[in-house]
Image (spheres, helix red, strand yellow):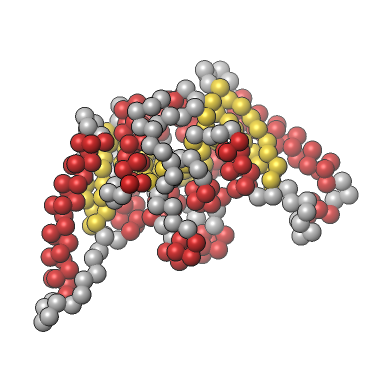
Length: 308
């Protein structure tokens, strides 16, 4: 995992302040430059935007830029005594997500670190979030840090969990997880979620027993696949190989509530369109609901394990 430049977008909220600690940790770990960014959302071409009705919109922008610069400087000023390369940028964009992604491409960034508010229910469905949209569209890995992470700080990284569904994206993410674990001396758990299997009704049989029997047959195969992935991608790293039974991301989130895991690493299938809207995605739900930070590796990210 080669990380030379980290982008840390902030809106000065409590959630983004929690993410700063993680961004600083990664910058120090990888000896990377940290780019602290604030996006001024300025829709001067939108007649519904309040700033469009000011006599001098550019004057308003300059004032907002000055205030943001002061706040951004105060945020990073305490880190200047550390041997870190920190740069502050303020970008103007019609929406925060576009500003973040444009900056990530221009740098280019190897990692984006974002705070999450952990919205659930209708608020998340109707409003979405900047973090969720960046997660969907980012060309580079995204580290999301929940405001509720509390003591699960990357600075105390002891156990990493790699979500492994045996797909190519999951195995690429596993390589990143192994690099991370080796750098910090953490244990690496490999976890596979074995979902409920819908089975056709057997002739004259009991459907529940039929389905349960089939899942039981899958368990040893899943455990062997985890062992094979550990041998291939995480040889020599201590950790557990676990198969969880249940449906979707919820079962893994429940596991994290009691497990002493400090970081989750996952791949994403890159689902798009109506499929995502109706079903959501495992990766997005994990990033939104996990009690600990989640590193998401996009489907298009080339595996660079062993580098850097």
